[in-house]
Length: 146
Image (cartoon, rainbow, N blue to C red; front, side, top):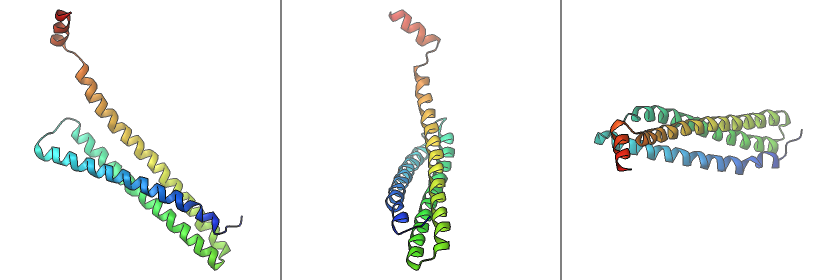
């Protein structure tokens, strides 16, 4: 396979958009962590707070890995383009393959982070669903009103 300038250049916009999306995820997590910290300082602790802190720490580490692999993929694309310019044919295939593999790893980690995010949202929903559950007194009162 022959690699030209166009081959790694095709990944530039994709990697740039991914890095932008990863940065947005990071900023959203940072805002959430700051909000939870403020609640913690004010003493507004609930039973989900420790679970949320644990999963947020995991998610921050995943986003950091996603960003690092995305940047590494971008660097490998730049090295591939420089290799095309220098006509290092044996170098090109290896570096471009590394770029693709790091991009793939970044996407897999992104999928894991999304599943962690979903788990956190499910905890929040289960907490709200418990509000709908009745007890002996609320059930008795509802029957009395009907």
